[in-house]
Amino acid sequence: MHGPLPGSEPDPRRQAILRHARRRFTADGFASTKMEAVAREAGVSTATLYAQFAGKSDLFSAVIDDAAEEFTAQMMSVFSEPRPARDQLTDFAVRYARFMADPFVRSVFRLVMAERPRFREVAVKFFEKGKSEFGAYVIDVIRQMRDRGELRVDRPSWAAGQLFGMIEHPVFFMPLVTGDEVMPVRAADQIAADAVETFMARYGVVRR
Image (tube, rainbow, N blue to C red; front, side, top):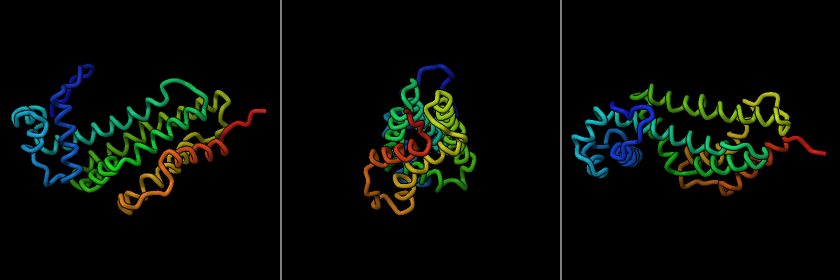
């Protein structure tokens, strides 16, 4: 697979291929996705597609890597500037809840899980990226909030996991297991607000 060089501008043809391939893979699955259809929908020749990706397996791996990068970038942007803990955590929780509530995100996870036996390394990388990069970053942000005296947290990793869990369970895991037609009664934004309220009740510092 021929990827972009570090520091180079994204190739618009490659981005178009990844975008349309992602849609095809999530809609049709790996086996039914045809390289020719991806090339046609992306507006490139089959030769251009194979110049970028040696085969369907390489294209699938690139699609999953791209989805993981997009997820991490969107979530980490929330913490680009320090703000009061409640405001920052609420902003993060709302974005995270909306992202995880997106049916497309569940489609990506279902796709990864369905193809895990065939692409074990890709699947492991996908899940580990969230834990090692994004998860670790949120833990560090909670640690910084503690050091600034905004939170009282002995184990930032536990606190982060509890915040994630309060959001993920209703907006992601329940629909993932029961189907997209079974959705939580509360809206994603309300779930996020309730999660932060519970989090701050447990870990917030009361100012006197």
